[in-house]
Length: 260
Length: 242
Image 1 (cartoon, each protein chain N blue to C red):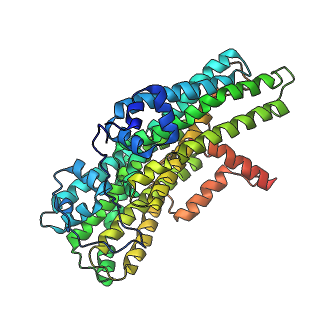
Image 2: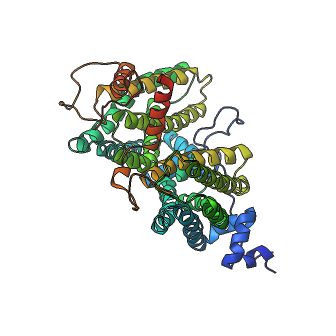
Image 3: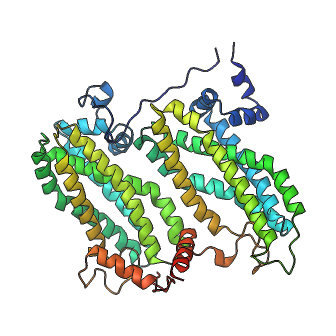
């Protein structure tokens, strides 16, 4: 016996069950999942710890408020992370980068939303368009709050390095990690919507990643500086990356420039 | 009747033994209910343990360098923990370990605390090594064997302490997780994040042992520039292309 009550062992919660785990029970099978989400703070808490609660609430009537709240959080977090991105170059980029990051993410989500609904239907999902929009809002919110988690690390690097390419690679790595978890949430959401194959969703995920990557090139510069706010030359994102690498490192592997 | 481990945990010296033995039940109890004690305990052990080791590291060059490194080394650990606190707190539930932000911060601090206690205990040994190493002179270069030997010794000691610190955390995480793979994933994610940020912070706060080009100083002006990974990448490119 001891003086203290036994520690509370928390229940496991995965934001999107990875493949290989046993099939999840139907949404709303526990009282925890049925608990309403009163505000954005609760939405953030829920998407990290009880993602199924968010999925369940998105199925209920009046889920528009939750969706709007998640979009709002995504925009706010994008703006905050954008400030960190812009802090590398300072000046105009302090307001331009947050605007571009937030707008870029929202536009990418809007561009991809119709195709997600179609692919979901093709995969046999019963999700309504409102629910699909809610899941995309959840995806963007989870992505951006994770980016906020990375923000202190990104800031440390942005204040010490001079290389645009290095900062670009770092932000890209953080974005990929955040997107992985966001897409895992989305996938779990569709699994709970009786999605039979999941193949359509996987195709959509590839499309979404390509769209966002291209968006970073379409609204460049996000990290360095340029004469114009938006690019005057159209480029594929891979070409842009290769050009940036070529500018930074010469044929001997020496760092030759492309700094802030 | 209270269990022996709880009564021992009330004293600081007893706590060192408990932390090193990684009694998962007791540590879990601390993380859940005695956070203030644990926070102060971890910060003090990091400042004392890592500070003592840092002082030994720097004293090869100069007593003042020892003081500076004694301050900087715990600073690297604390800044890394704080910088990654939010991220670690988010990654844990996403990977399946449902702990609060504060609890995740405590667990990571505890890991660093274990490493610092080990480093503090190894600091007399490191001091003996430093004392037996030929002193710094005008002839000493970055390529000198004595400098290389010191660097290697410190790397081995720090890597050993860091490894034990993380390994000791595993039973605690295992007790909180539904299965071992979740505990492993969380530990790996935290470790990767801490190594990534810690390397950069250590890079920014260098020198820890010696810089032949500069006088003894806390942080040289030119040091708050560049990135650890960029330098490694650049060196790798030069190596491959030359």
